[in-house]
Length: 137
Image (tube, rainbow, N blue to C red; front, side, top):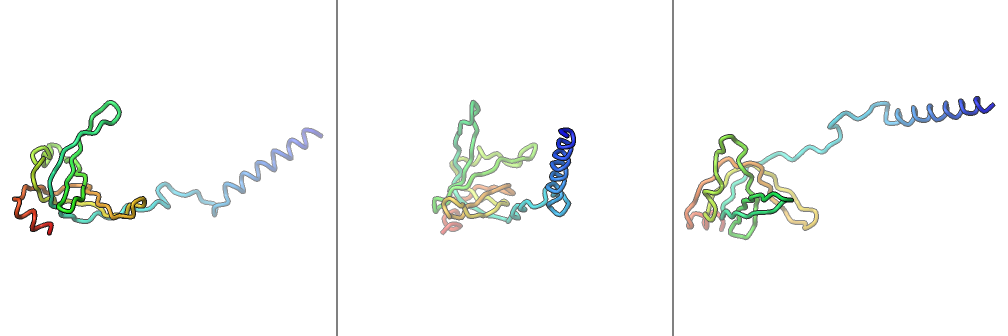
């Protein structure tokens, strides 16, 4: 009698698992399905002053480059991924530059402000002080 009860319980549990796994229309979601697609990159032109800072991450020290425009907005500048690099950001530290690249603009959920994320730099060139003021009125 105990064996029959045990068999019945195991059968019910097993059939319940089959119904649970087939509950989603009988198909398991494919890899990458249902994920949000990243926003498309758009061309961005920025003018401002390049600054360099060091940030400690664990035991390592990481060099960060930022561009600050005339309005005080700060954008992180990505390093060159090319080998050899197309540009050396150290050459532009403390100088006013014009940066053309690709990035995205999104709204920060915490601050409800628009943020600009520069993903790649296409060109970077030094500009004179007067031209920098004209570019960012």
